Image (tube, rainbow, N blue to C red; front, side):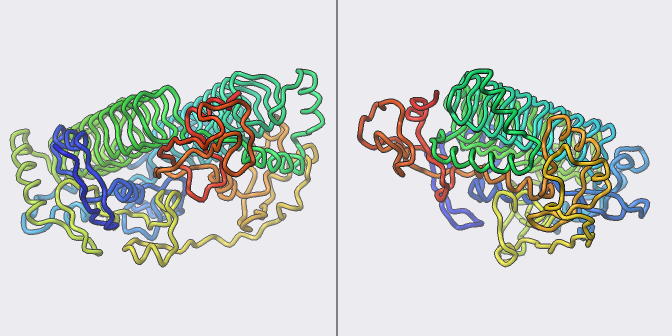
Length: 584
């Protein structure tokens, strides 16, 4: 088919469906989307609570539990261990299809009658305050990942040990306050570091060790603020720096970040990719317009996926998955999953399913564990199931669901945002696409004003000892007032041991404000056309002088590209060729 330009049913802007897109839709037997890629992504993100826990009553016992589902939601919630037990049966909620009503209306009713697990978490040991993960040991407030140990305040991870305040880290150990640190040990206050160790306050570092306050280094050792030094000079500098002093850390953080802004950034972070576009894509082939993809092939419009192929519009998980479409939190040995949410672990042939595990051949089911051939949690024979699914898809087109904003949902669309138990500002959508309350309500989204528990601090952050050497054990009993937002927070024993071991100061900001500071360096999962900032001998702003002559000489670089850097970003952005010329 030829490419077509269509108008998004949600935002009313035009978007293009390419011939290869039509081929994929035909391959998995779905109609083309009626929403543009960004609106589809936001719609999925509204179903994801990335890193918040709420105190709420257990719908089974009435006792207070912590859950990723807020108490204001109408969803029923069971404590996760009971949810996984044989104490209840999701098939008890099964019902016949009502052919006189929109199918999605019936699915929504089922979603709010079948209990939800308090937290989506598997294989935990002493990690009661973690969620959205598989494999956690002795960890606290860690979310979204696989395998973490002796860590706290980590979001987005795979194989992390003794990590604190990390965002998007893989195979990391003894690390603190980083964004994107992969295959690393002892990395602190840094961004985009790979295959390195003993790195402080640095950015865009690969294959290095003993680096301080630097940017754009490859396979280097002993650099301080981008200048080579001897091993002895580096050791002396680190001793004089005294990493345990809060004042010293903040001064070096500011100095390093100022240096970062004076050096170019590659327009995208892509490593070992073939015919691929996006941001932070690694070991990928034919992956387009995607974000945080590791080991992907033949994918488009996907976000935060590892080890998957033949997927469109898939957000979060993957892991040995293929033929996935317009789903959120889906994968782990999965195949042919469509329009589903929070379905993982050996699943196949699911459509419009929610919280189904080890399940195959299900349509519009909620909470199944090792189920098969079911619709609305009612089991059928294989033959009945196949006949009903064909009839049901036609019924969804003949009698579609219409949401509160008048948007029509026929077969082939992900769940409406109003089905989510989360308000917009409680979801991942707010993290990447923040709205005001007025904007969210105007677009038909839920909004819930946060009710913080009023806890009076026993000490303000500014009154903490500047030097970690002066911090006594009684700090564990203190309730600290965040210097940024005023919220109360504590230091936990494992955390204090880490600060003392590494020689780091006690943080002055609460975990949320520390995350917000790291998130300043995170580009959004959307892409815009931009031009290379290289103007010849210098960048366009005149801050950075090129170290070598470029192929375009003294003339501005003519290269254009799609980048996730915001238009208002302060960073210097270079194309592939210009950036490689300047990387030392």
